[in-house]
Length: 78
Image (cartoon, rainbow, N blue to C red; front, side, top):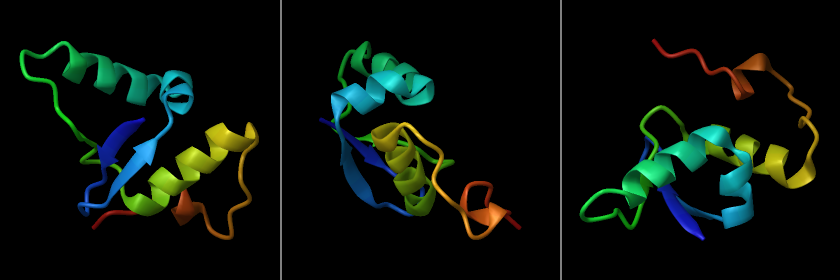
C-alpha cells in the first residue's frame, strides 16, 4: 500500500496495483522512493480527497464513474 496525502491533508492508502496503473501516482512514488530518505506519505498538492476518490473508483472499476457535475472531476479553483 502507498499512503498519499491530498491537498486538504486527508491521508489514504492506495493499493500498489492501482498505483502502477496511474502514471502520475507511479511517477511520484518512484521519485520519492529514489530519494535518500523516502517519504512515508506521498503528497499530492493538486488533488483533493473527492478527486482522489474518483481516481480510485476509476482504476478499481475500469470504467469512468458517473458524474452529476463536471466539477466532480475538474474542480474550479478561485
